[in-house]
Structures are given as C-alpha cells and as structure tokens.
Image 1 (cartoon, helix red, strand yellow):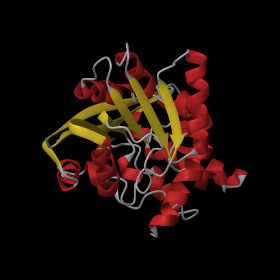
Image 2 (cartoon, helix red, strand yellow):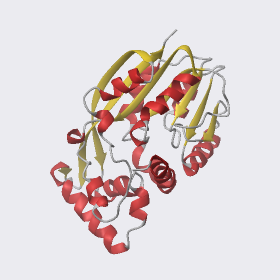
Image 3 (cartoon, helix red, strand yellow):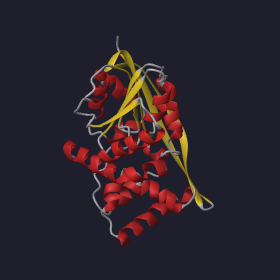
Length: 274
C-alpha cells in the first residue's frame, strides 16, 4: 500500500473513531498503559513526548507524574483525536499537557526542545514505516533519554483479530496490511535497535478484553477501532451482517451475555546512546 494513502486512511479513520474511543477502550487498555508508564519511570520536572496520543489515555496520567515542573506534549495524526484530548484536558484542569496534530513519521513537533522520554502506546503498528517514527522520537530525545512503545501482540493471541478480514471482505479497508507484524517474536525490539536505541528490553502481557454484551464488543471493534472508516461506508444491512459475523468469530469467548476476549500487548523500552 502507498504510505501516503495509508497515512490518509489512518488520519480520517481515527477521526471517525475519536468519539467512541474513550467509551470502548479506556478500561480495556489500562493494563498496557499501566506497564508502559512503569517502564517509562517518569520523574517530576521532566519533559515527555507522547506519540500517537489519541484522546490522551497515556498523556494525562503521565502529566500527573511529571508534576511539579514537568510537561508533556502529545501528538496524533487525527485532528478529532487532538480535539478530544484538548477538551478532556480542559475538563480535567490539566495545565502541563499540550497537543498538536502532526504526522510523526515525517514531521517534527513545533516545540523542538529536547525530551527526557518518548512514549507511544499502541500506535507504531499503524505507521507505514515504524522505524522512521522511532528515529524521529530518538532525535527528539536528550542523550540518555528513553523510549517506551507498545503494540498489539501476535495475531493468534488476539481473539478479536477476525475483525480485519470481516471488514476487508466487504470493502477494502487498507487499515494496516501488517497490523500484527511488530507484535511477532522480537520484531518490536529489533525495530528499536534499528532506529538507534540501545539497552533494548521487551516483554509480553496477556490481557482479556471484557465486554458486557455484544453491542459493546461490536462498538469497540467497529465504531471505536481501526476499521471505523471502512465501517462508515457500510449500509445498514452490511453493518448488521458484519456485526453478526464478528460476534460469531468471538462466540468461543462468550460468558453469559458478555465476552471475555483474549489479547496480548508487547512493550519495549530503549535508551538513546550517550
């Protein structure tokens, strides 16, 4: 797929998903966010970059850890995600977080001061060239600064993975042809090393996505996730058919009215050489 087209798909796809993201994903992603922040070991007074920040699930928690005196800058390719993050930040009264819409593969934040740490929570698998994005993060860091990035794990360990072929059988989504690639074996760690980071460490976290009912499971998969742009093109009949097919694909994980769908996060940490 053409990288420019893929970035365009990501931008407008996440614009569609922004209104639903907090509702369907904030609780489900907490184990990954918890561990990412533990590995980042943020300290008061530091400056931090949050790449592909979305609605600020990581940004606002990090902002608290940086007080007093520290600040965080979040960026995302989606205007609607940035708008949501700014609104949520205002509602929370967060004063040490700023947001900017940029393409993290090819653009620098307008604030070019050096950062102590760079974070990227479940964003790298959407980049056509994740190594290029990591190189941008490395360039933004001070010597000795650290990066912590998470991605979804191996396909066979993510029970919701059939969402992609289900959508692609109806309309070419071009979401991310290699979505699960970085979560395979040690490829995320190798990509950090390729981008120039040292002392790279990698770990895997098993998780369960817990949905109270089929509507929530479908809302997360279709409206609030990476296939939102393609899903918006479906007519009502196609939406119902796709939802039914998806629920059938996760039937083995049904528990009463709800679903407990297995998943895996892969998290890696690296350091910019002194």
